[in-house]
Structures are given as structure tokens and as C-alpha cells.
Amino acid sequence: MRLTWAVTALAVFLIGGATESGRAQVRDTSPRVQRRVHTYSIVARDPETGEMGVAVQSHWFSVGSLVTWGEAGVGVVATQSLIDVSYGPLGLALMKAGRSAPQALAALKVADPHPEIRQVAMIDASGNVAAHTGEKCIPDAGHIAGENFSVQANLMLNRKVWPAMAEAYRNTQGDLADRMLAALEAAQSVGGDIRGQQSAAILIVKGESTGQPWADTVMELRIEDHPAPVQELKRLVRVHRAYQHMNRGDLAIEQGNVEAALREYSAAEALFPGNVEMKFWHAVSLVNAGRVEDSLPLFKQIFTADRNWAILLPRLPKVDLLDADAETLERILAATQ
Image (cartoon, rainbow, N blue to C red):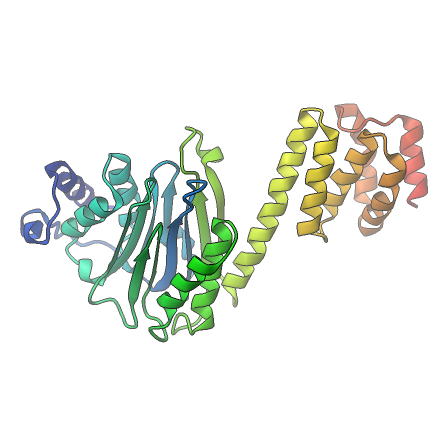
């Protein structure tokens, strides 16, 4: 990001207005690197939780590293087409400084020497939505801005793509991730990117900031290069949810709540049934709950899949992660041979 671009955009913000007629006085004419990230995407906010998200797919490598931007308590941005990545961080900076999404986008467009080749969408923490499709975005291109969401697409096979995304988002039940994924799937189902598929990403942040960035990001997943990136992204969202249950199970163990841990580990296994490690910690929690007999079938599956878990098990009592004496350990290992 060039300094002149940032200074110009922020100057527009400080002036207090951003209009097309003012562009000649504040436009930054310095060249900026452009990348051909033609794509379809959605920005959205869940009014019940306040969570905000971006989801995207493109026939371009690592689309998530360029298009998706978000900050808890501030907003989210999707910047695409002949992309200027600066719209992401600068859009967030302007919204964080107090501008609404429409005001932030207007300021960035005024400062941009080539807004006609950009496609951008933003939503702020209050639910204000802004979207722009430049007149020189490669057809078919367009957007629909609705209540708490915007869908946008360019270089599409046909003009059905963004209406299909909007309809899917409005009509899908579930949480924010479910609804955004439905929008991506709908885009692909009616033709999608004229060039095909390659990468996809999803980013969800909290509606309010805790001041801890590691806790404020609800979900951030990227498919960098894959023949069916939206479907692979959907699979990883399910895996992510399984590990969220695992994390809550681990926290319950720390707090001494074994029954809560068992519930969380069971939920994780239901989402990711082939994962041996999830079964292992479930079995360990059963032992800690005094249910050794119930743990034996699980341990048998685990040790059959990989005997390294049998090597690990006797190490756990030493670090207070397994409430089992030597006799109990021998019983488990013997019963699962």
C-alpha cells in the first residue's frame, strides 16, 4: 500500500465528505499494483449475534489472502475485480474511526484513480451496507445489497449468479457460516465464474471486540487451490465446528467438569467420526468419569487404528490428565489387545 493512497483516503475522511465532484481535487494518481481477482463473494452480518463475515470463491490462487478483510466490532470488507487490496485495511480503518460503511466506501472511491475497475462491498458493526460495481468490471458483473448483506460478482458465466446468491442467503436456515456457504453454492449452481473454480475462503468476526484478536475471530478458513473449493470449504467448516467442540471439551476438563467434556467430545465425534484423536480424548474422559468399561470399546478402536496412542496413554497420569492407577492402565491395555 503506497503512503500517498492512504494519506489521500484518510484526508477525504477528515474533510468530512466524499463526492464524485470532489474527485479531481483529492484523487491519488500514483500507480498501484492490481491483481485480477475476479470472483463472487458475500459480506453479511447476523443481527442476532452481531457476527460479521465474508465468504468468497474465485478462479485465482489464494483468493482469501486478498479479498477478505474483517475486524471484530468494526466491520468486514470484500475487495475484488481488478483488485486494490488497500480497500480492505483502509475500509476497516475508516469504519473504526467512526465512518459508516457507505461513508468509508465513498471516501475510498474518491481517492481511487480507477474506481471503474473495482468491485467492493462493506458492512459495518451497525449493519450499514455499501457496495460498488465499477462500470468497467468484466461482464457479467453486478451486486445486490440487502438488509445486513451484500452479494457481488464479476466475470461470471451469466447474470443469474448474484441474484441466486441473494435468494439462497435470504432463504437458508442456520448460522452465518451456513447461510454464506449456501450463497457460494448457489452461485456455482447457476454457472459461477466463467473460468471455473480454484480457491475459496470464509472469515467471520465477532460483533463486539474483546481486545483479544485471537478470541475475536470466530472462523477463518482458506482453500488455496482445489478443483472444488466451495465443497472443500464446506467440509472444513464442519471440521472447524468439530474442533470447537473439542476445545470446549478441553476447557471443561480444565474446570473439572467431566460430564460437560463428554458431551462436547461426543458432539465433536458426530461431526468428524473418522478422527482417532477425538475418540481418544473421549475415552480418556470416560475413564476420568469412572466409566472404564464404557471406555474399552473406544480404546480398542483407537489402538487398532494406531498403537502410538497406547504408548501415549500411560504418560497421562503423570501430568494429571488421566485418573488411572497402574492396575487400571493394565486393564485397559490388556482388554484392547
